[in-house]
Every structure is written in C-alpha cells, then in structure tokens.
Image 1 (tube, one colour):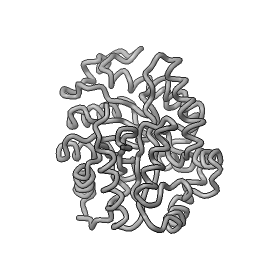
Image 2: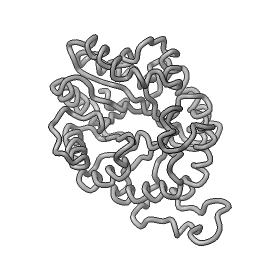
Image 3: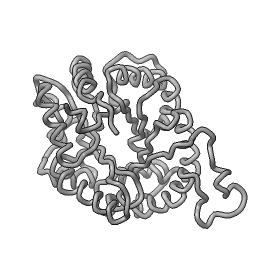
Image 4: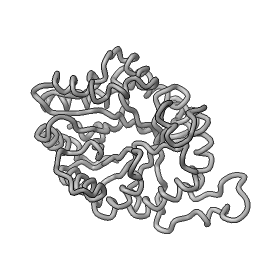
Length: 315
C-alpha cells in the first residue's frame, strides 16, 4: 500500500468544492473535518495576504483531533522571530503537539507588499532561525540579555513537544540550510527529476554532515483522479502560470524538462495516481502535500482514494 511508503497530507486552501458559510475559519475547520474523516492524517495551510495561517490552525486544533497541522509556508521577513515563536508555541499548545511549522522567504515581487525588500533571502532566514529555533526548543537565545530574554519568559505552558520546522527550499543554499538547521523541506512545482536528483541528495547530505536525522521531504503536488487529465493540465497551466514565472519555480520546472506547470500534475485513474505518488517515495520523498484540483466530484473521488491509501500510521 502507498500509505506504508509515503505520508499523505492535503492543502486546506485548495478546498473541496463545498459551499462556504462566509466565515473562513469555520469553512476551513469543516474542510479539515472532511479530510480527517476520509482517513488523511495531515492537513497543511499556506500563509496568504489575508488570514493568519497559525491562527487558523490554532482554531482547527481545538475542533479536529488527531491530525497533524502544518503551515506551508509562513513567510519570515515581515515577522519578528520572537512573535512567530509565540504564535507557533501557542498553536502547539492548542494542538497538544500536532503542529509542524513550515517557513519560507517568498519571492521577488511578492514580498514587497509587506514593505520588505527581497534581499539575501537565505541570510535572512538563517538570522531568523538563530532566534526562533532556541525559543521553540525552550532554550535561551544566544547573546540575548535584559527583560524577556530568559528562556522561561518565552515558554508557553502546554507546548511541551518540540515544534518541527521545515523550510520551503528549492535552491542549493536553501536546501543546505534546511538540512543543517531544520527537520526537512517543503517543495512546490518540483517534479521527479528535481526531487530525486537535486532536492533529496542536497538536503540529505547537509543533514548527514550536520549529524542530524534523515530529513522530511514534503512534495507539493496537484493531484486528481480524473478521466480527462489533459483538461486538468490545461486548467493548471492557466492557474499556475504566474507562479511558474517566478525564478525558483521556473528553475525547478526547467530542471524537470517541463515547459508548462500543468505537466507537474498527478492525474489519471486511481491506479495511475497511486503509481505516480509511489514513484516520489522511491525518489526519497517522505510526504505528498496534495492540492486537490478538478471538479467537486473529482476532488471528492480523489480524497476517497487518498484516505484509503494514506491512512496507514507512520512512525
């Protein structure tokens, strides 16, 4: 079974084609319940310009038990690491240890809305981690002094489990940082060649050299059980066209030899979808972060399959 080889998670923001109530938190909580009821054990939520992903997951944690909750990803530059640590530890307490914190640095042309220039992103994330990681681990930040600097000042009672941190990484320098300092990576628009020949070897080598465990490699993919995969790919070419022009994603697609982003889709009948997801596991991926695409009926059919193959417990 695929569930024994790769962990399945679903992107809450992709939705299930169900009518909304007009309240985003209530709607996403309902989606999380539906995903959990199908047998999927992880849900992910990207950070948008509007809602706060960690705030939403904190609310979901109180209503939907026993699933992992992950951000995919929170952009660090506009957020002070102490504030982000407080948010993450609060969410971890609400979730009783089920939170995974995915972090990233955005892209040129997108970060500027926060009044932040896209400048030296790897250095910016490394500096952020210098403060964030000790707080998440319950330690004093090196070099910190004065009021609020003791480890106890940043502690959140109930957040006793360490918060795993994953980095959105595709470039060599960011993958090295993820291997050295974090528990793994989250990718997007990265196909088999990029995962198997670039992401997994680089992050795994960095983790080994740092004396760390094998990293988690979460591969973001649009997935659909459908009889018309060409239609899906055409729809994704339109939906992902702007993203595919961003430098890091364009480089990943080029590495895979894919001219258009729709080619990244895992699409076809049930057997085809299972085989394509299993192929990522053989390349070293540990997780598939699934964005459900297609019609409401196709998304529901896909979720049923994912629940069936992804409900096996993981160590």
